[in-house]
Image (cartoon, rainbow, N blue to C red):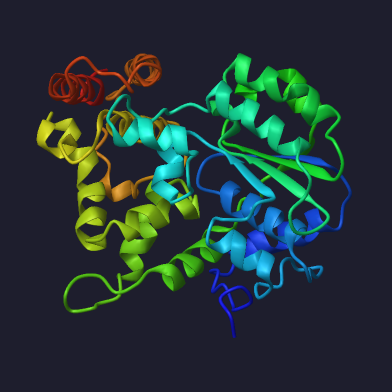
Length: 355
C-alpha cells in the first residue's frame, strides 16, 4: 500500500473528546470557537474536527484515518489545511513554517514569535482565496486564538464572517475572554467538557509509557498526584508524565507546601518563574480552602502545613493571592529569575506563617 493511502496511526482521541467530536460533526456551521481552560484537549479536538472535514471518507465518528487526505494531515502537508499558531508552537509541534520565516530563524536574525503574527494572518486570508487542492473543503485552524493581537484578529475578521467558498474556521482557545468580542460573535461556541477525575486518571494510566531503564510503569498513586496537581486537566498532567521521573516529580509536588512554609527556595528551582507562580497560586488556593473547612484541590490535606488557630489567616492569604496574581501578569519576563524565585519563597514563608 502506498504512503498516500496507508493508515496514519493517529493516536485515538480521549473518550470525552471523541464524544465532543461526534456532537460537533452533527452540527452545521463554518466557524467554531472551542474554549475552556488549558489541558482539556482543545488542539486535539480542533485538529480531529479539521481532519474529519477534510477526510475523503468521513463517518459520524470522524475521519477514516486511511485516505490520502488523512495521511496528508498526519504528516503536516495537507494543502487545504492552514494552521495559524505562534512560531514557537509550530516548531514545538513539528508543523512547517513558511520558507521566509524558516530562513530568518535558521540564520538567527530573530527569535521565533510567541504571538500569532499579522503577516501569518494575511497569508491565511490569501489561503482561503485559492482553489481547493484535494476535496470540497479548506480549513483554517487558529490555536491558541488568544495569541492574536487586535491587528491580527481584525485581519481575519471579514474572512471569518464571510469566508469564500467552502472554507471553514476552527478557533481554539484557553482564554476566550481575551478575544475580541467581534471574533467571538462570528463563531459558534463550544465549551470544552471537563472529564470526571477517575475517567481522566484511567486515560492517563493508558497514555503513560514505561519510565526509566527498568521500563517500569508509573505508579497509580503518582499519577493521581500529578493529575490533582494539574487541577484534573488530563493534557496538562500528561505533559508532566511524559517529562519522565514521574515518582520523583510527584514526591517533589507533595513536599512543596511544607518546604514553602520553611522558606526553602530550593523547592522552586526545578520550576521556571511562571511554573513557580502557578504552583504557589495552587498552594494558596488550597490553604484558603482548608481554612474555610473545604477540601483542597491540588494537594493532599496531609501535605499542607499544619494550621494552628488563626494561622495562616485569611487576610494574609488574601494579600498573598493578590500579589501572586499581579506577579503572574509579568512573570514571562523576569529581570532575574533566580532573585524572583528567592522572593517568591520568602513571601510564601511569610504568608504561610502569618495570622
